[in-house]
Length: 196
Image 1 (cartoon, rainbow, N blue to C red):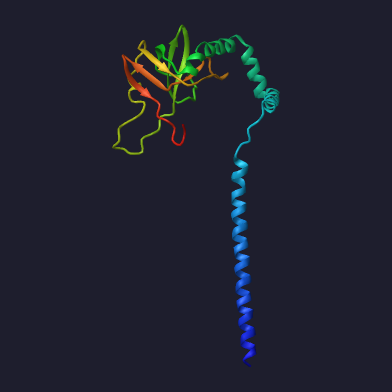
Image 2 (tube, rainbow, N blue to C red):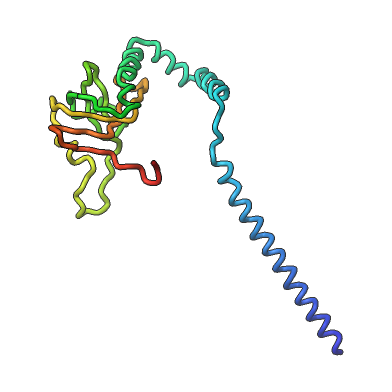
């Protein structure tokens, strides 16, 4: 009779150890499954040849065909020439003198807050991005507050890191990173969180 309880005890211990091994294996396997998508989400850098091939594929799509037509049109050439005219200022992040020509962007614009300005005889959209609504009702600070004081014909100094364009817009789009009026900084883009 004393043998049976020992056998039962051994069965219980083996059962518990087996269960523990199975559960540990499932937990470990689940952890590996959860990790795997993060590896896939990291985009692989394409070679120059691969990028050219992707561009060729895109140019054959309806959006690519429309873009190529716009690029060859007089309006597209004008926008591209305007962007090229100030590209040196973008790469060196140097001052550009500008005159505010409008306090609103073209109708249907989806660029957030911005103004129109003339730089060296050409018109540009100066886009500052979306205005975030302040979650704290009592905190009245707004990063664009001083920009809202701009008036048509104000002379300003602009610095930017990028100029872009799109068929939807008749003007090059300058990303407003720094604005000065009357030797006073009225806007300086805050560095991105977690970025350089």
